[in-house]
Length: 349
Ligand code: IDC
Image 1 (cartoon, rainbow, N blue to C red):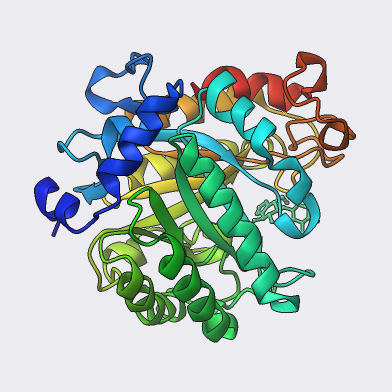
Image 2 (spheres, rainbow, N blue to C red):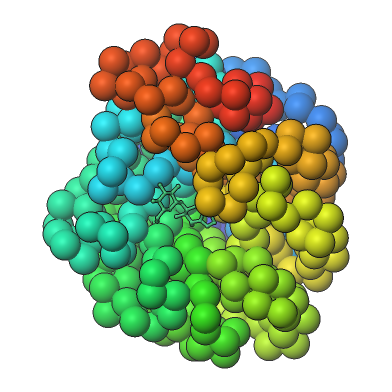
């Protein structure tokens, strides 16, 4: 189960130095809040990682070093093979300081011209973003963005290589969470579970205490989009500690059915919403802000962490910035925000 806070600190020699560094920069804060408060009342001048330290799963929640439940809120990058230029020192300042995010999800696609075409390059990109986010006191979700093909077992060897290298470089930091399969699809829960039980030991070899996020059946719908639900996971959970399960939703497409699933499943399993949009599941189309707000309210009430898709200037409606923003470097200009960006940036901190 969860190691005592003191044990965790002892095993992380870099933790205190890092914390001191973050505090010295006076980084402002925080899409991370104390669960018990039930509203956004986080300490004003403390960066999220400095405030909560290394996280661990406690019951169905995520807890900080003192055992306090923590709800992380932030953004997911788009695929770094396409939108690396949107994640810079300046844009991360906007995300961490202006928007007050507590976490960034770094999406390394495996296919679609991603990691498999140049592992060294994409590892360096992820590593660079991890360093820059860490300097700003953020937590980082390292997303192994498998999508097509949908069986994560197709990429197991590449996943092991990636997480071995990332944990070798960053495993002692304490602010990383590892999402080992973005959206399994067309594969049974047993297939996902056996993949997880093969990859988790590799992650743990380099970061013994890192929280691992496991994608779920049917594009991380907890099985719902393939006619199942969370009960198959409850009956047959991944055989490892410190694990959470992911749930993804797109408000304009998914509405009530998925909302009920999230509500029900989060009473029984530790859940992290590592991807969601106010728009349709294509990442594009019209928004349903009313439904999206219902999801955000539920996640706040139950301390379910989330990262919104996506922190880029892609033309689709789910990208937060208008096209051209990243080349212009105008992330901080309110005129650069799409409707989705204005909406979500006001709800992160
Ligand atoms: C979409 C991107 C789009 C890209 C496509 C292909 O918005 O630019 O061409 O992927 O990979 C997911 C996936 C995520 C999708 C997103 C929106 O994890 O990769 O991004 N989405 O469709 N699951 C549900 C929605």
